[in-house]
Length: 242
Length: 68
Image (cartoon, rainbow over all chains, first blue to last red; front, side, top):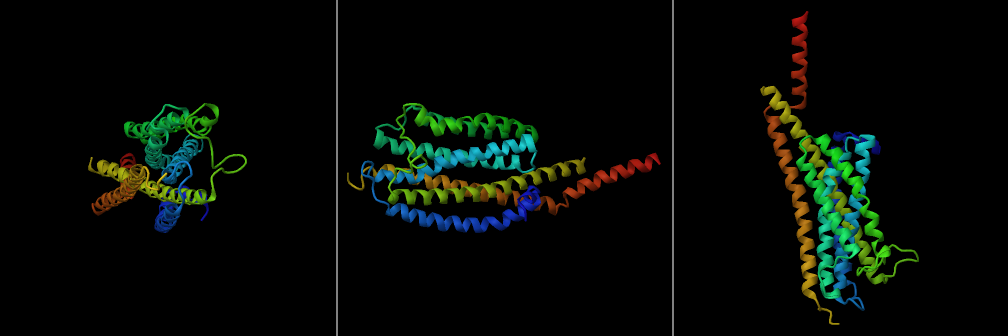
């Protein structure tokens, strides 16, 4: 099956029904292995055992940004290509992105208290991450507020494209401003500054989180297609009753 | 630094992580069952997307027979 054929919601449902159990199984196995490696990882020479919070914080931060990136592509799909699944993907992704961004903020605060002596500072990285969370909450509210689904999709798509400006700000905030948050240590020119004993479990956890995200996104998209079918049938029911 | 220093922050972070992940999984599973159940109920009542089209088609043919 070609990817373009999945643009048909019925074909997408068939493929999702087939893929979700396998992806779910693979997610469980990868999470178990990644958590085992994370548990065995040594303490950091400066952070001590609190470095283990990074195995949750960093993947959730990446996913929060990745999810908005996907929503940006979906927004283009809605506005430019009018792809039938674009707004379905955007609507399904938003709560997932919000959850991972919230997880990033909370775990970051819980790491910050023992390491920085405070749960929160208004530095550029933390503030831009909080703005990303508020953007997620905003688009979820917009979906629920606008009655007409196609109008809601266009409004959300425009907000998503504008909100994408926050992604490079989050990424480069530690370079552009003097922040308490540390600079890039995984993806940087000259290679990672993290020791392999911590880097490998971190990458494994990131892979497990990404697989979880893909599985949940497919499942949430399937739910959204079914919800739209229910809505269509209710309209048919109302018209036949009238 | 002892290995268990700040253990309460580590437990709180992982506890919150588990809650968020379980909540997301529960959300998609419960929503899936709900949508499937509602769809099945509507289909049991004989309502399908085709019945809407049939009704529209019937209305059109009635209209044509009136004008003929």
